[in-house]
Length: 64
Image 1: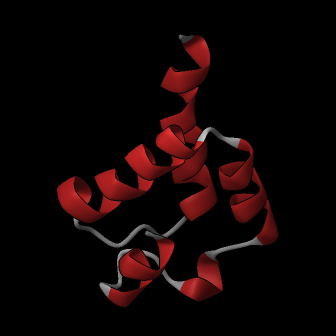
Image 2 (image 1 turned 135 degrees about the horizontal axis):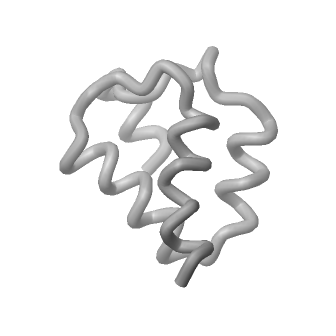
């Protein structure tokens, strides 16, 4: 899903840091896919700060 988001210019590989991938990897597969699919299917806009976006999307998952 990361590759799909890069291909459609929703994410830029230059803005993706090791911390982004590490945090994404630490999540359950379903959570990671929900976030990445949400970018691809719902948001459909370029994300300038992917790490900040990921942290904001993980907040609700951490509360439940």
